[in-house]
Length: 270
Image (cartoon, rainbow, N blue to C red; front, side, top):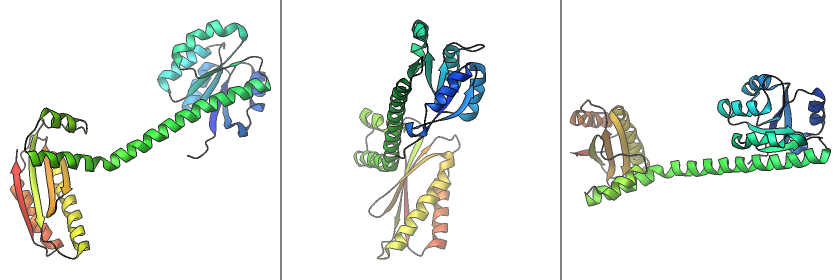
């Protein structure tokens, strides 16, 4: 993962506080201040426009205070992390923020060491969340990449044993396939074996794309390879009936324009 510079918006009705904070947040800390607001009302508009990682806000301000701002941001822009600047006498008031997912607090007066420690804590929280999202995305990408293989294995097992059980229904539901809905049709397209691997592979890709194009508007289409050709399973969800024989005949006609290899098609409906 690339090292990311996190963006911050400062919200405080005292310009001196914001100026001091700017000098204490160097780029080397992993943060960059991209905007300022003097009250919560202006901060909302700024957050919607700049979309920062962090909103560092004073708790007591005119118009819309820090608590109200955190409440609003949790609804309208939950991606932004909210951190509070608070005085020593305001921690009882800060208890209201417990349910607002406030990530950290920075106490006044703003010493160099306090701000530095605050930034380290804040960066640690953001880095951990970023790593979690990255790992989740990687796992999801791997899952999506292998999903066709998982589905193929389930269908092959179902065709082999020719029996739909509660266990098989549950397994398919894990892949968002409901066996109790629609009409299933199983077809097999066998084609002449040849030593020309490239020609066979091109034919296989051509047939997969053709079958999907013909039947996907009616529901779901699943395809997988067999030792002799291509197996396809359609789950018809559309109320219209498909003329499979006519559609498959059209496949044969189109195939003749693509290759001279012999093709044979079988069909079964459940």
